[in-house]
Image 1 (cartoon, rainbow, N blue to C red):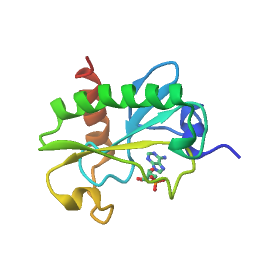
Image 2 (image 1 turned 90 degrees about the vertical axis):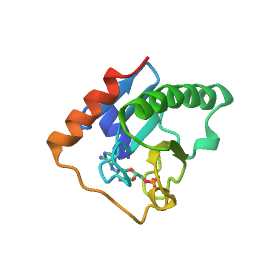
Image 3 (image 1 turned 30 degrees about the vertical axis):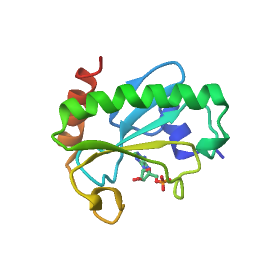
Length: 130
Ligand code: AMP
């Protein structure tokens, strides 16, 4: 069965899209730890990040770097954290989380933004892509 992220790639489920290229997609996490919490995924469905080929892994990291730089320009924060979990969705992904305190990356603290705010945020991050 296709992962929820493959359904997003296929356009069957909506997302707050930030960036896309031939092999990757970046969109806002629907249940963010912090404002701007973003997921970067390969379009190829592979469960675990470290099972990606060397080339696909390196390409995802470069794509994530570009998105992280745009995120840093958009959301006031000390730095952008990168985290890999994968316990919920078995489709490799990188979490990019604007970080101001350690609790921003514990996945225990969540923030709520309404759909308009999420849409506006994704658009502003997208506008800051180099
Ligand atoms: P994990 O697999 O543990 O790294 O967590 C998966 C992440 O995907 C969680 O932070 C979820 O909030 C997020 N997530 C799950 N479904 C969606 C969705 N439809 N759109 C955006 N983010 C999602």
